[in-house]
Length: 245
Image 1 (cartoon, rainbow, N blue to C red):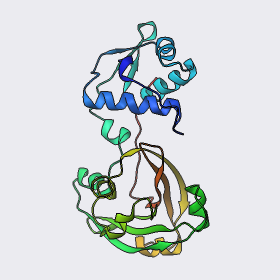
Image 2: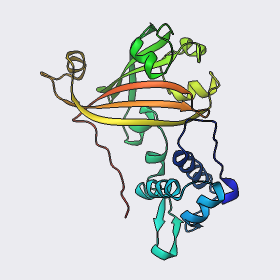
Image 3: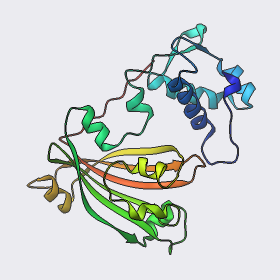
Image 4: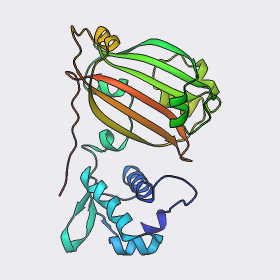
């Protein structure tokens, strides 16, 4: 397995995240299978010229989502990822998530236009005068508003996105039309009250608890492609994570 792993020193993606991504890809492709023993932390660190702490962090995170098993002195082996790999290891579109629950997904476009925003520019680490495409959508399940999504994209990086009709998966459009090779994403989740706009859209009589998601999606070259802020109604969302020991 070691000869199928590599580390890129030319990107900003942390080494342990590169390892996680590569091992996940090998598991999902079937190149490394259920029950296969993995190299020890020491052996893998020496082979890739990394610190043992970096490899340990990679293995620990893969164990936490159930992709790896720890067997004490027996080492580490691959779990069967089928029950949860799709939900924890991949980004899925809203439509895919809702359809998996047996519901009908739909989207209402609130706005799509060009913006200049100093705060967003700083997130992308670009000059303040750079133009961004701002897309605001309301997602519904069986006709009930579930979340409101505000997404930004650098116009010059994905110019074809200006012709997107804002339906379907934006990730599919980015890959198939804009020819962007998506690599990985970071997402945070926090609690917050709904704004006046969101309360009205969700049918709340007063400001109510919501989940606030912030996601940064990167290309394989670690360039930031998308920044998204999504407000999810608190009475409709639950996140499950499988934890290991």
